[in-house]
Amino acid sequence: MRDAFHDELDSIGQTLIDMGDRVKVAMELATTALLTADLKLAEQVISDDDFIDTMQHELDAKTLTLLARQQPVAGDLRTLVTSLRMSADLERMGDLAHHIAKLARMRYPATAVPPELALTIQEMGNVAKRIIAKATGVIESHDLEAALQLEKDDDEMDKLHRKLFLTLLDDAWPHGIETAIDMTLLGRYYERCADHAVSVARRVYFLVTGQYASDEA
Image (cartoon, rainbow, N blue to C red; front, top):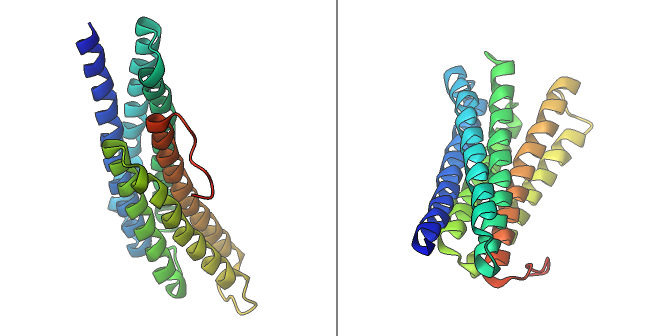
């Protein structure tokens, strides 16, 4: 029975890794769709988000069943509780990729991002992809040093977010209010994605140590 239980725990961990991989691809494709006005790619991201949602629902149902049936303690209990929370973070990251793709679709056939902001948005997309990949790797490896490193990656995203806002607040901004709102939302989507990745890493830290990572780490 214990072997079967731990097989179930391993299955939950693998599902979280699979979700992370799908979210990384979704964010990469959404950024490409945004910057190239690729409607087909945007529609793919929007459609695939349903699969990520289903993965979360099934994982959470399995986790709750194990909590009720096995009544785990100590490390096993932490594994199940943190799995519920990490699945919510990953699902939300998928939603943010979905929002980016919807903006690309809404502005089609135009490109949603003005030329002078294309590089900044591409860099934000690259950081998001990298931080999602690192968070997924932390789920798999339980590497505490890598988990703490994600805070520095988040700092890079915050710098890009501030850079975006400086452009939007410039009196010489030529693209009007609607585009400014689009860019404000985009900045928020990428920034929140990084925040959720950091949250995943912190939950892994708690899973391994039973303690919360310090914000100063």
